Structure formats: structure tokens, C-alpha cells
Image 1 (cartoon, rainbow, N blue to C red):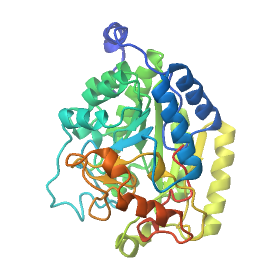
Image 2 (cartoon, rainbow, N blue to C red):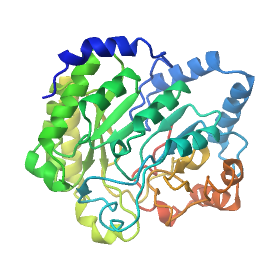
Image 3 (cartoon, rainbow, N blue to C red):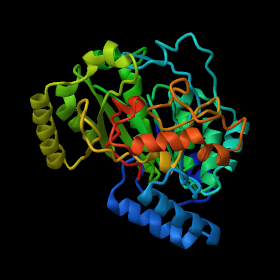
Length: 382
């Protein structure tokens, strides 16, 4: 395991020069507690100027009424910092179906260009189809986002989290980081996350957790488990394992599939509802017993759930190429996109015919074909 002691004093000196931003509300994924929502709203009311307050009011009306044409500027955005990945996960298309595509990192110049188009944004996620830590400019992007006082975080496979990156993350007061860990069995983890190394991941996580705790920082460190037929029975043991590491939260969601993936990779889905119920109850009891925060996002392929998704009214997903798509699940611009941010102004894209048509279809009683297998169809962003 990486050592913390040798870097502690140096980091204290560096971190003292970094201005604190918002007093980090828990924002480890897109689902927030009522308490966290209330804290953010209260802070915003005390920090915003008139234009920001007016936009906040319009955003509230937008989320409440969900019109086709929107008057408010987004409070939230997700930016794909790279579409490269160093893993070949069993359930992921990035290094399978798209392995021969020309992949790239987002430049700092383009990142700044994107941020300027969102003057009222308060939350940003720096993650897309790829592994964010592949981009050597990620830390600089975090620095820029935090200077803007944005609530900032990203998902990672954790394999590239070296000592320097960990120190920078903690010094910059990153609000949250969520590690994708689908198994605590080395064999199963490396089977699912091909090219991954379980021992390296856990060592890196331990270093980050120890460093965060040593410096008394508030970066939330979480785990996301993708629930599949391969690993569903592991969940209670996984909770105990990460509780022992003092991880802040464990979130669980089923694998999400799009297009032909549904036919080819349906073997990953857990279809036994009795098994799901049994594991969920057992896991909830375990979480209560050891006082671990457990969040279930989705369990199986829901067919008839009521729509609660409000992504198209809250903010966009922006690919590394600049394409604006509805959300992180529909991050492949070839499936659907509303325009390119590097070719036209976002204000024009935000209310163009394609965006309005998608909002209309999403509001209808019939689920859009693009959203058919989405695990977040019945979830809200805020």
C-alpha cells in the first residue's frame, strides 16, 4: 500500500493555499438526499447575485413544469474528459464495438470554452465513456471547476490513481470520486474488468482514504457496483469489505444496455426477481447493521416504471468531440445528439427543434426507444 506519512506535511502546506469553495454537500452521484438539496439551495441563495437568483427561479419552474422550450440556463452539466479507456469491461462497448475508433482527450482550451457557455452552472461531472484519469489535464480541469466554485466529481476505475494524482485531488478539495468495483473477489473483478488489477485498485483506494482522513478533508469517496448475474450474491460481503475501508457510500445499479447490446449482452441482466428481493433485503439489513450508506439505483430491466427522468430540462451531456446528447447513458452521439457545441452556440442548441422534440417524446406516455433499457428512467437528476 502506498505511504501517506511522507507526503502529509507537504500537502498541508499546499492545501492551505487553496481557497475553499462551497462546503461540500454530498454529491457522489446524481441522487441526493433532501438534506443535501436543502443545504445547496440555502447556500445558493446567500451566494448568488440577482441574475443567478433569477436563473435559479427559472430553473425551478423548468424542472417543475418541464416545458419543451426552456428559459433557464443549465445548473448542471456532465463533460466527457476523454473517450479512451485502459480496461475492456465485459459489459462495456468502449473498447469492444468502438475499439477501432479514433479516441482522444479533451483539451484544457476546449474545457474552458465549454464552461464559458454555462455561466450559471453549479454542478459538473468530469466523466463520460472513458477513464478520466487517462487525460493528463484532468487535474487542471478540476482546478478550473473548483475556482468556479462548482460541485465537482467523477467516476473512475482507480487503476491510474498514483500518489501525485491522489494528493492533487485531496488538495483541490474534489467534492466526490466514485470507484467502479463490481466484486471483492480478485478473480471475478478481473474477469469482469478485463485488464484491471484488483490489488492495485484497493491499494490506491486505501491511500486516498488514508490521505483524506489524515488531512481531515471532506472529499466523499464512494463505490459503485454494477449488479449483474455474475456478482449479485456478493453484495452483502462487498458492503462489509468497503465498510471496513471506511468508504462513504456504496451505490448499486444494474448494467445499462443500448441498441443491439440488449440482445447480445442480456446475459448480464439479473432476471430472477425473487433473488433480487432476497439479496436486497439481506444487503439492507447488513448495511443497517454496520451503518453503511447503501443506495440502490436499479435492479433489473424495468418495463413499466413511471418516468421521473428530468435530464433534458436540467442540463446536457457533452462529448469530448463537443456533441450535446441527452444524458450520460446516451453518451454515444451517433445514437442521438442535438448539435455540436464547438460549431454553434449552446443557447441555440438548448432549444432547437431536435432538443424540443426529444423532450416531447420523453414526456409522452410511451418511453422513447433510446431510453428503453435506461436504469435512470425513473430517477431524477436532483
